[in-house]
Length: 412
Image 1 (cartoon, rainbow, N blue to C red):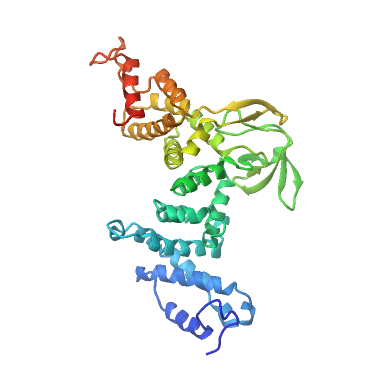
Image 2: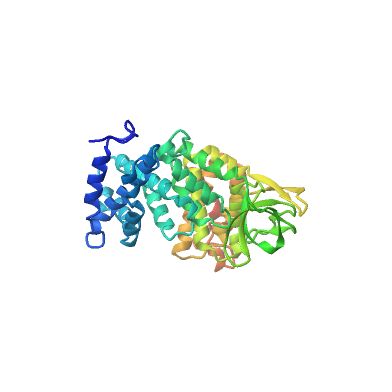
């Protein structure tokens, strides 16, 4: 058997690859659903080895249609099989560690993303499915999350590229970014990495009428905003005139999505959206944001301190700092809890909000407890009791203080 020029990198000879391919080509993914994941994995393998040096010398290898395999697998819904596998009851009920199994799936999905440039196909209908699988892989796995944030981990490289692509469309596209970051903060160091990743954002993306921009460089698709641009959904945050940006894609006939060269903490932007969400119907995003913050402060007390001391500069329309903006996270959470409706979704949001405040109490007891008492967030009787007295004789402030003691001292 003749050996391929990449001998030393793989253990298959060219003849063995051809033999396996002949076998895989006989599979009908529509009649046999179980063969779909195998066909998809084989396509990824072919794509990877065809990218190795010396591929031009192997005409037989280049003639194998790995794209055709992927197309068949996608049409048969084979990608969803990986989600079904990882959600299987056998794995959920397994007593031993399943990190190794998830690691294998992580490696495959990373290779799949690298092979077919999924990070450049954000409008592909399979993106949500890929993100769902990734979240199931990393969820609850501190060791895998630690590997993800280790720059020397080449296996996670393509997935990190996908994350950066999602961050490139923030805050225009928030849900997908939060979904992935929320599971990647499992553990103290991963939580710190997630906070720093979002806090050190180098730009903001927003839709803009392309006719209102000046073309700076047509080749690199660089544009400049002529008039100050107000970011939708974030009142008070303005992209100053003269700011340049990179055109990411067209989202309508005359509307483009542009990544502006305007550094602003992604954490600050996220909290501004959360604060203004009090007056908007954005329940799903609020749930994701509170869940994200709850996990951050749960895993890392240092991040909790950072959130309590968060701030930034607001700029005027000429890009000059006008005032230092201090984001009072605890006050925002208190306002949210106080305005929640007494239903199932409201209870879930309250649970996350109370958990965040409980962690913050350990960092800054006086500051946070004062806000909690002032906001009177625990007194639900005030809506129906005009005399401000509960059935047990406690006033509103008494009730808040009593519950506050339980938050600070669980064994009280």
